[in-house]
Amino acid sequence: MTSNSAQVVKQKHVWTPVEVGLVLFFSAMLIGMFVPRVTSAEEKANEQITRTSMHIAQVALETYAADHNNTYPAEVDDALKSYYPGGEADGKTPASQGPLNPYSKKPEFPVMVGYVSTPTAVRTLPPESTGAAAGQVVYIPLNNHRSYALLGTKGDGKAIDGTLPKTTLVLSSIW
Image (tube, rainbow, N blue to C red; front, side, top):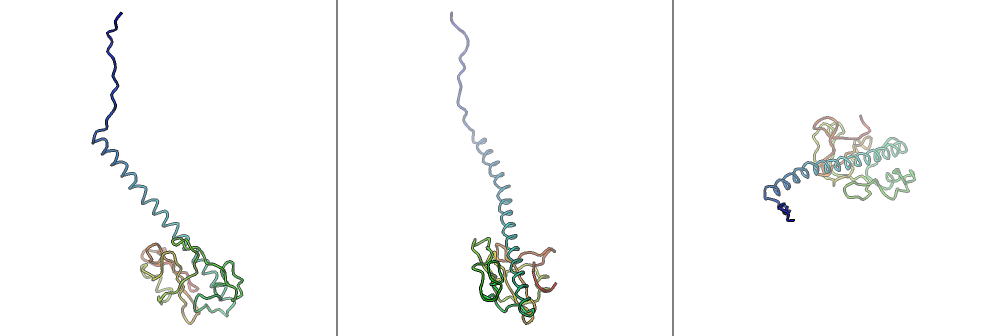
């Protein structure tokens, strides 16, 4: 007996240029949608770590002032560093390292830059360049060391935004 059934020949599927283009287009769209979200989340996390470093500095400054007749230090020296976690809070034995800078991945104490103003005036300004590197906390002693301002910097070196639009986040002894 002979069979008249036709043989089915399987052919390999070859992708057409249109199909390849569509796959590349949709892949690029998916990447384009998720990469900004991931980088935005990383920036927000880094900013929150910097805010935490600002609060650590604020506690150290307030504790220092309580022990020094309500005056704040003129600079970030070993006396202030002794009030950071790991220090002896005696004005002599400093902490071995400051809080972690989320951008440099290194522990850092606050820095001082030539940025002089009042906390109220700084708060009302749009965030601008502080002169400090990304993730650093900026300490500004004010009013003959009776007050201070703390600013934190984002990845672009500008001050962290305040809660109101076009304002700067400032931690201070004056509210």
